[in-house]
Image (cartoon, rainbow, N blue to C red; front, side, top):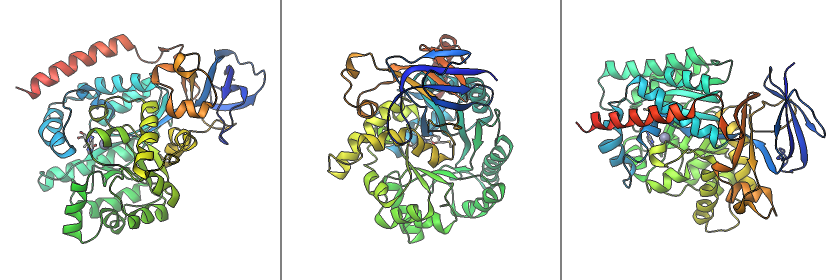
Length: 430
Ligand SMILES: CSC[C@H]1O[C@@H](n2cnc3c(O)ncnc32)[C@H](O)[C@@H]1O
Ligand SMILES: [Zn+2]
């Protein structure tokens, strides 16, 4: 058995305690063998002066949108998508998606993310990039049927279903899939009614944007006579394995539906703030028993993929939304960075315990902004930054050692991405 030990650090355990301990990993099985004192592996990662945490989990992203980072800012969702993003995405090639995904994956590895959920198109390119990068992903092809004829809509729906069936379990089981209608307003009722049962037959979960803006709620209330999540429930789209992105404009009845169904909500605070979509009632959802995870959304509405940034944003806006400084305390944020998001998107990771997947991030604490250490959970929620991540490990494989990404060639990825983005924008603006 090939082993790896992570030695000399303090380790964030599922019960929230942070003892000094080593972590011994089985690299072949990708599992944590033991957490304790003086554990020697064949390979060693130094974690002295560092915090060893479960790898962060990003519950909602469009990873290839890194190519559109900074392309269109300072607009609300609807006009941002229709005037800028969708026209530019119309010019994306499969190669662009691969290059954009590689860039996003480098950024994720460098910021300690080991698992993520992603909705986009040209998904086999993203599978290939994730396979090489070494992360864990729940991936799906995003379907939009509005403005398509029936044949075009069916083609998109079939692509999403076929992708979900074919790629579940890819990359040695690190990739799982979902059927991903883009949202409740961009996929027509007749198609949801036809394809949700097919996704259930295929045994894959659903992931979609829901209740992101007030403008998205009104047309559903007008056409269906019920709130969006009641409409989703009617269509069989709220099951325990499903997860929705945003959940900003949810009322008490919808929070009740989510809690009862066990459907996860991925909170995307940076995107919600940047697009001025609104403040999600996260504390109320948590109080009702909803599984709330965290996600960055795409880099074009964030504008980065750092989960540590997202954590701080979630803590700050959570207090503002609840008008209560004790809302969304640091402990909840640490859970959302790790196992709560993993649970929401159906990944096994997010907990440092024997037998769990060996997905970890090691954070260097010897930095001015992390000194002194009164409370490491506080540092995780409020003070640590992406650049503090020293090592990233997923499935027992070291993806980054001493801030050097090992699975992708960072310099070449950055160069290819800059070239692809320049050429994309030139085509989009022709
Ligand atoms: C059809 S693939 C996914 C699709 O979603 C778009 N997108 C990016 N950010 C958001 C957001 O915040 N709300 C809704 N849709 C979003 C992305 O550009 C792709 O077209
Ligand atoms: Zn999104």
